[in-house]
Structure formats: C-alpha cells, structure tokens
Image (cartoon, rainbow, N blue to C red):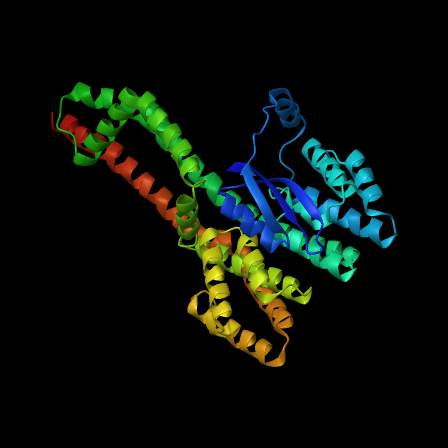
Length: 408
C-alpha cells in the first residue's frame, strides 16, 4: 500500500488534513466520503524513513491487536461516562498503554483534536488499528451526542468478534499440529529410515516390489535434492504470502478458504455472523443503509464475502429490497431471508439481524465443539494411508527375502 496526504472538509465545514494508507487515491477518496469527509486534494505522501524508530517500535511491541482496541474502547467509555474531557482522556491513556505503536497513535490523535479535527476523522487516519466500522460508530456517536454509548457498543462488538476468532483458532490447533507432525515424520523416514532398509535390500540383489522401489526412489530424490526442496518450500511460502496481499490473490484465497471441507462452512457462518452483528449495530446506531453496507463489507475481513455485500449495496441503490439483494448473493439460508423480510416489513431490520447473528453464532459454537470429532476420521485416514505405504514398502520385500532364504 501507498501513503497519501489528503485535504478535505467535514460535514460542519471544518478543514482537515492527514495521511491514509491505501492502494490508490480513489480508495482514499471513497474512504473519506464514507467517513463524512469531502476530499479536496489527495496526493502521494513522501514518507520519511525512520529505521531507528521502527526498530524501537518492533522491539517494544508489534501492531496493536483487538485486545488493545477493546481495552481502549472500554476505558474511553468509562472516562466519557464520568465526564472527563476527550483530550484529557486520550492523553491519560497514551501514557498508560504498553504498546508503543498504540501510544504513538493516541498522541497523534490528540494532536489532531487540538488542531480542531473531529474524533472520528482522527481515527480514520489509522485504518490498520481502527476499522471503518469503528470509525463509523464513533462518527454516529459524535453526531448524536452519545459518544460514550458508541464506545461501549464498539467494545462489545469487538469482544464478540475476538471470542469467535479465538474459538476457531483453538479448534484448528490440534488438526494443524497433527498434520505438521505427519509431514515431519515423512521427511525423517525418507532421510534416515528408508536408506537403512535400502542398503539391506541391496545386499540380497533381489528384485524389489513396486511399493519398495517407489519408497527408495522417493528417499533418494529427497536426500539428493533436499536443499532445492527446502528452497522451493520457503520460496513458495513467500510467493504465496505476496500473492494473497494483492487484490486478486486475496479474493481467490478468501474464496478458497470457504471451500475447505468441514472447516470452510464454519468460517462462512462465522463471517455471516460478523456481517449480521456489524450491520445490526450500524443500522441501530442510525448509519444510513448504503453507508452501513459499505462499512460492513470491509469489516467482515473477507474479500469474497465483502464483494457479495457490495453487490447487496448496488441492489439497494437501484431500489431493490434488502431481502431480494441478499437472496441474489446465495449466501443466506431461507430461514435468514425470511427473518430479513419480516424485519423490512416491521421496520425492525436491526433486531432481526441481531437474531440472525445469534443463530449463526450458536451454529458456529456447536460446530467448533464437534470439529475435532469431525476431523478425526480424516486424520486417521491420512495416518493409515502413510502406515500402509510404509508397511507395503518395508515388509513385502522382507517377506519375499525370508522365503528366498528358507528355500535355500
């Protein structure tokens, strides 16, 4: 991404300027408009390299995560409810946070507030820490005079999101460990075990069965070319990470994740739960429908699902109902579409979406509790296949050689 310097005016007519990281100047303009800022000038900024500062930040801590943002939102809610001024609140939090990048960000926010900018626009200058949904909720809180409630709603939403992510990571930890152990075992067997058996078989000078010849050939290839194999694996990992950072690569990878057997359906439902919860919170806070869909499309953190949500936004802009546009995406179950239809008819879309989020979250929670049991047969088949190949490759020639020895 590139860093762009922008100048614009808020809805109140105040002049603001700052830096935003984005892929293009058009993306910067879209983000500013969604945050209620009219862009006047957008140019590519010249970022001064600060190697020593970057090193100090890396030694002190990485990029702030959800924990840091949740704690900040909770503390801001408490301070705002107690009547502490915004600048004093953020100044105090900047001196108490442990993450140096978060502290530097809060100091930058204070500088923006002291120069006359709105709180939401200062948050928007740091998209890597504060999401577009976070910024939109704070903007609504500013416009309605309920900033403390906005911080509370954001913290509750982020806590639910973090809990879902942690459950998915915990459920996938065991299968991932088993697969890594199997891969490591295959390399060890190829490099150390098979060559020992190959030397024994070669001393008999007998014709070996096909499985044994395949194992020996694979082992010889691994031993002879292991530096190239290691380089190919490392290069493949770096190439993959570079590819998924591109727009097309991220879209393909996000779509592929949803097609993984067993796990893909869980990820899909967790994304739909995040969409429903975020959209319900945004509409309940008074964010316009089209803007809410735009914000939530970025908040789901999946380019494939985000593209479907943007299709919903396009349909709403054409005058279609929310239910009809949702049905066209092929993402929602008939039960969810019925709840959306009821919400539109009764004017309680936010409540119905909250029920949809609860429905998906219950399904995800149930599936995560049974994920290990669902993956165990697959892992057993992989291990059984590996053991079968090794048994055929090792014990078949030993059996044949034993018969030859007895025949002599």
